[in-house]
Length: 96
Image 1 (cartoon, one colour):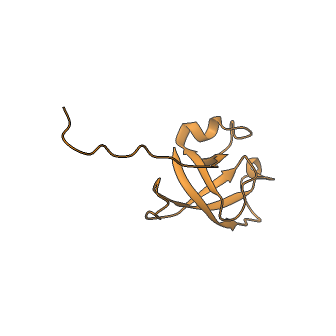
Image 2 (cartoon, one colour):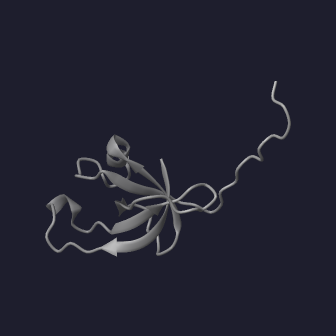
C-alpha cells in the first residue's frame, strides 16, 4: 500500500475505453510523518478523493481488485481517504 497526497489531476481525452468515466489523480507519496517522498504516481480514484487529501493507494494486481477496476488497465488505484496516521512511540533504552 502507498500513503500519498493528491496533488493534481490528469485529463486524457483519448484513452482505453475501459477507463472512460474514471477520474485520474496525481499522487505524491509521503512518509507516515507526512514528509514528501520521491516521485509521482497516477492513480484511478475509486473513493472520490479531493485535492490535497491524504489517501491510501494500491498497485499492481491489488489495484485491479479495487471497486470498478476489475478487467481494466489499472496499475494504481486509490482505495481510501486517510483521517489520521498514528505511529507508536519509539522505545527508549536498551532492548532485550
